[in-house]
Image (cartoon, rainbow, N blue to C red; front, side, top):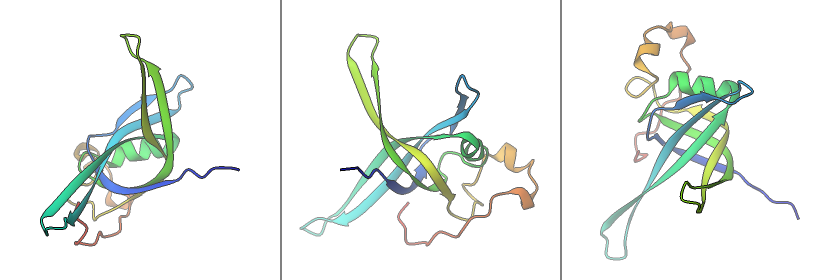
Length: 140
């Protein structure tokens, strides 16, 4: 039986994207994404939890995300869950799940949390990515 591995997540970047290049000169960007959930417990007390996830994107999408995103920017991502494994310097085995992004969509109007300021000032408005407004009742 074949499997199905798809993740769709809407959240805010927890840090600026970090652009690097593989030995093949393929661009890769890594960043964190946070999403929160609010609810009332059985006693009616408000509760909140935050989920932090590391993300990675490759190629032209990596360059675009690096150019127009910064910490705090809302982003809708679609991708797959991957497992990274490595040996720590002390010899122990380590692992971590992350999302490898296949598609993303800019969310929000881009006026307050949009791209990197130094790059925004250099780009004509016609070259800025077009964003869809975000409903005001989403708690991010």
